[in-house]
View 1 (spheres, helix red, strand yellow):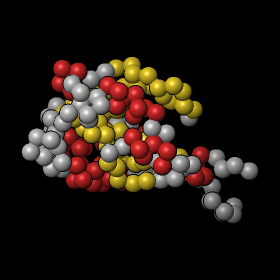
View 2 (tube, helix red, strand yellow; view 1 turned 180 degrees about the horizontal axis):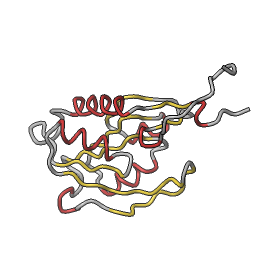
View 3 (tube, rainbow, N blue to C red; view 1 turned 60 degrees about the vertical axis):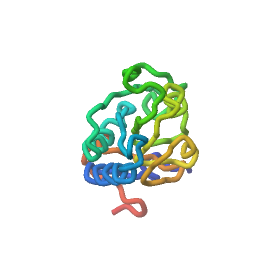
View 4 (cartoon, rainbow, N blue to C red; view 1 turned 180 degrees about the vertical axis):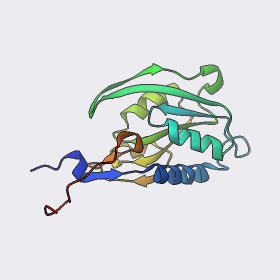
Length: 166
């Protein structure tokens, strides 16, 4: 029998996300094209908003915008499309811009985003092998068949043990 998503799950708490997003900021610090500085952060909504806020704070980046790409309906992927673009006068071709997302899975969302800002630096907190080629920086890699449960996806409740019944 195939495992259900929660059985090959990687559960991320708010504390862990904060630590990992700060680690991502530290990895990006000093690597922008303007004497090491970055001019803007563009968060991919919705999952990229929390890590983007943390990265922007850590690196003292005041220009923060969003790009919204719809590619999931619940837990199934569909063709990604941009439904909200950032201020293109600010981001231009992406030079000096950090694009931040929580996770790269297949990389299809990031392909669409890169088409809008081809010179931007793409950074995710978590990466799966199939999408890694679309990311310039990341913190943690998980297997392709792992389902990541982010803190905004979870509520506290009893969970059956992985093996056994008690």
